[in-house]
Length: 72
Image (cartoon, rainbow, N blue to C red; front, side, top):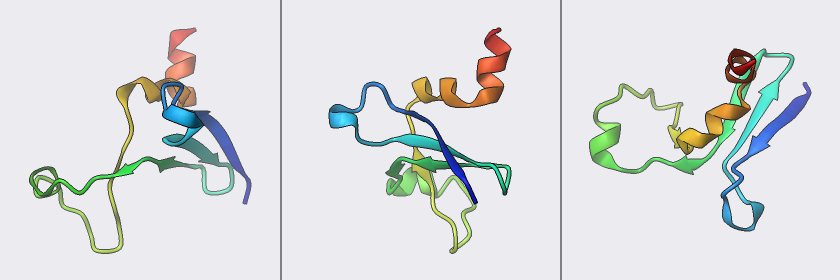
């Protein structure tokens, strides 16, 4: 498996997360972000026990290739 870092939040203090990666074997994205723990928001979703929800700022969608190619 090869992970490719697509981008870090340019406004993150000290170059920390969030970060978006692409897994070229699974053909999927991995998102490192803040864990959502707000019960009101989580109750509006159907999240299986083996999954979690992370949050990234809207400005980070620029790192997804599908979004980049739409800008061309």
